[in-house]
Length: 376
Image (tube, rainbow, N blue to C red; front, top):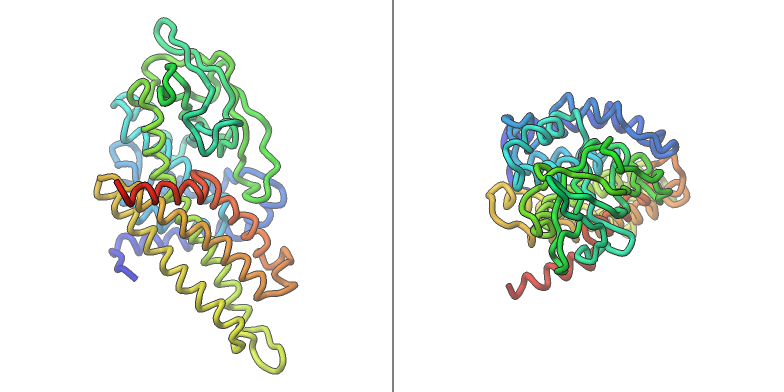
């Protein structure tokens, strides 16, 4: 395993302690009730964990992307629903504001996001535009002094809870003539659907964002007009590192539960870890978790270098998300009937893991990106 700096280890250990004390005990309750985890998010904000990679000048902690990935892995280990909320608000709106925002936009929008006073949301997906974002139908019509947005976004993390929405809307007739807009909660015409009834991540509310003639002034255009799709794809590169770290944390949690159980459970006169059928599953998972973590760190370090990191982010996201699904399934198998019981948490991790293969680019899209990158 590649060495960590003293600061990175301190971040990991601090977040691990908080996550085990404040997130782990509440995770089953939040999964059952679907309650949005505001108290836990407030605690993370007080630790500076909602704006980890945003510079201190804009209210953040100014840490590197590896520290961010380490923190997300520890949060996901305890509660994947909290992890995806943190990943989205920091990995997408904040990253995009930092990369494409004006100085005034950074002071007005980035500072409260980085301080954890606000949550951010990323509104790209639509009912008919998922893996093909260029087919989105939300439109922005030019008016004096700004734009009027109309359309519906779907599957938006923190919809109705977030304070700021980075909304992609069509601003021309060309397929990629799309622009990013900064829309505040409370803007007239902006409304939200109820939280979707999902398979997992119940505490991370996901829903529709509805725009009915929402007036957005010119100073809330993020980046260049008609360049919003490329801005969004850059944001997704960042977000995919966060999802990969989340998936790694889920896999590690499932592995630890199965590993401990295999050392306690006795069948046919010996611990089940002594049977090759169990031992080999654990050996394979341990190896794949180590590999996933290295891929996440490699992508995070490439991001820190300032260059393009699309390939590294897609590798990490593809590998770690498929590992999360495999690890939770195999861990349930090792526990047998107990793995199917809620008290052992694995059924929740299994439900939470599946979506990591879907959101912020399906596994099929990641393979497409990677295949194309081989010949670029």
